[in-house]
Length: 269
Picture 1 (cartoon, rainbow, N blue to C red):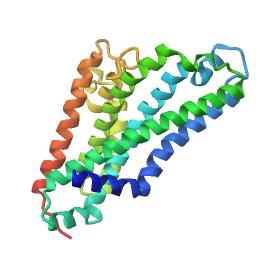
Picture 2 (picture 1 turned 180 degrees about the horizontal axis):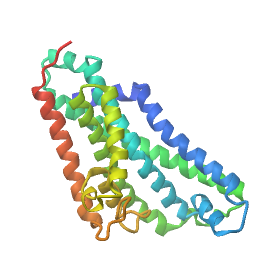
Picture 3 (picture 1 turned 135 degrees about the vertical axis):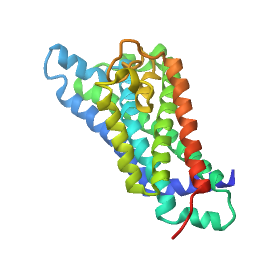
Picture 4 (picture 1 turned 120 degrees about the horizontal axis):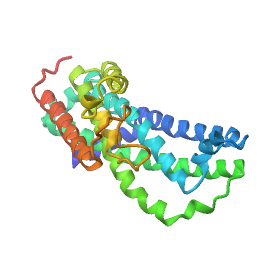
């Protein structure tokens, strides 16, 4: 608990925390305002679809879809940045010199990352809902559905599934940066894996659907923002519950790899 609280205090003070998740919230607000300003200029179907992000109660799902979709990339970058800094800044060496357990310290650090990520996602969602309400007013869209109980009742499960998937994606970045012992290498490799898997899914959907980033989409379920099949839409997509189970396997496996490597690595510098 002491290591966890120490890691949490450290992350709260780090500029990377506010830059990473501030960009996520900022992009969401920018998109919503742009849609509100231009999406209602016509009466065609495209305009109606564009305005769905400011039409409640559907706006709740659209905002959450954006956060959970793009949030995975930011989680990879954030996890890699934090893990890599433990090596490049010499923080891990200092902790080990105090007699702390290496693996326990790394796991406590990731636990702090998971908590910060949860707070960031909740704040981003609240900011998005507020921006959608403002955007709806600007676009002349009624706010009658903002209090829809059915839509609000679905949000906790959708958010929980998406949060587990995003934490797993953060763990991938965390593990990659730990193996590379570098922030830049970890961030670069994490981003490459993120986009590389999406590209490969076009050609190898039956294989890629078992890999982490595609699983993160499938874990949301077929009725959740178009999930359930990943980018390539394989003929036999994984069920949401099975995909969520595999997400948990990737999460635990990534942390085991990161902790195991740290426990045996030679710390120099």
